Length: 308
Image 1: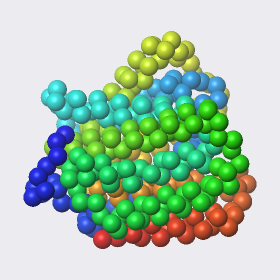
Image 2 (image 1 turned 45 degrees about the horizontal axis):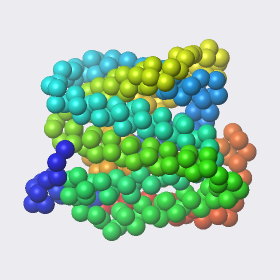
Image 3 (image 1 turned 90 degrees about the vertical axis):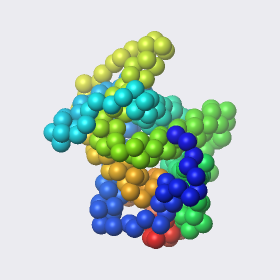
Image 4 (image 1 turned 90 degrees about the horizontal axis):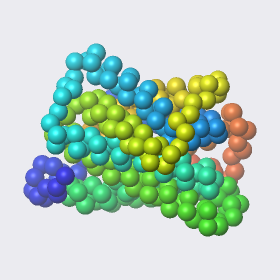
């Protein structure tokens, strides 16, 4: 993945691409799939090591993706150079990103996790300039920062009441690293799509490589490869595998190729909003004045990022 000349077509910023009806559907699928994942994740880390839960999740997801690829008749065989990119997707997005967040969550409140991950749109913007020489759109940058500030305001009461000790500092570092890994994987996905490789095929291979890395982590650390047959674990696992992985990642990576990583990454700002809405129904979350102010900032940022 090399930087292109500013005069090359690849250097034209996707910040100016039109956000059409199909993009809106992809955006909605991404936000819905990821906003519902936070509740499901709680049942995944209670009784099974994170690496094992993630391996089960992506074994199911990759199998479904391969069925989808086969049904569509998409290309399945690729040269070694392409597999290096697929392995990068597996490492950065489908294994390390989640693994770092699962472990980082042990020392942090869930609200701070959302705030850290909401920086993805801004990090994507910076990495897009670094790797592809996309111009940094002031409008998109301002919208991303508005969204970040909004998410921080929504979760501030939870964050302010947390004792920030050494464990919390380590957890924060892991989550920042996880977000950076996710964004690096976004750049790889953009490069792969530029080569004309179908999103479904790349995602299927990426998830498969992710399973390889997760299995290696389990073996190296000597962790038990466990499975919890309880109903909450099984239902949450299937939801995460089918909705939050297969559907949401297909939608997100497709959207990334259409409107660019910086704008697609704003979905990481929007899904905490819907996660709080879900929490209002199922967990008796009460909206405060800072939360309502934060919601307004997020929605305002949404207008800056998604419009041309």
